[in-house]
Length: 331
Image 1 (spheres, rainbow, N blue to C red):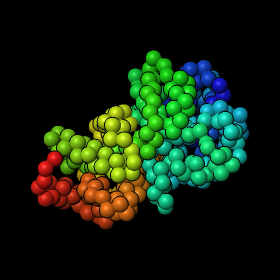
Image 2: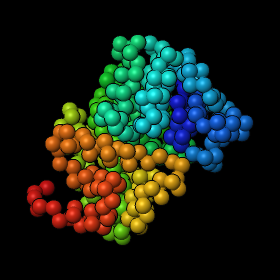
Image 3: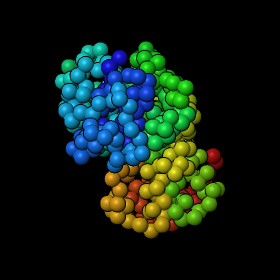
């Protein structure tokens, strides 16, 4: 099976490496000219995934349609704010039998749509695009290392998710399936906000009790949102929910946790973003979830406090105090 990966960041590069190790031909589209040259000449991505080489099955391309044309499975790993534009550029190369696998964890801020919805919008020539969402606790570097990882593939059609399960599964990469696309996507989006909160608590030296509480109440918060939007409650207690939440809130490789930690240490958001070439999806997602929860009339206190820290200049310590001082209630 011919495959394509759209996006040469850390996650796209890691998936390309994994596919190559499975001896599948992979065309990797890379937007940045300097990274593209490194991938083509040295077989590496020194900016986003240093220390790893692409298998010989992986070839790097600068033309997105050339990369996708003829691929039976197209994996898309680009930041959410760029997705609609990338999807539109990709559309002419997508065949009616192509499987499209979204790896992006976030919402489109303007429409508040999930990425699979934006993807379907962008493919008007295909009546029922075959879209699968892949999510779960999966740091790119660990996948590239071949460390044991388990994720979930969610598709509206069970057979589409099963095809991706069969394609990707190996002794180091276990794939489960489900049909709750909404739940998997919403969990993947909100967990990044909770990770910022957990990192902020670490930066404030708030202790393990505080972080455990944030993770637990964050799970309740994301579940409440998901169920309101038609997702299955059980999804949030699986790999895409609690699994991804734990690793993103506690792992040293978590961009969102690191961003929160720096905020807790007193750094400004502007200086943190300026010092990194990596995208922390939780920053944009916080604003999207703020809009969505207001639209639904849904209480999401952790997300709301992170919004006020990121976009209203609230002091992180005061945000934590305000969370602890909320009206007492039953669990």
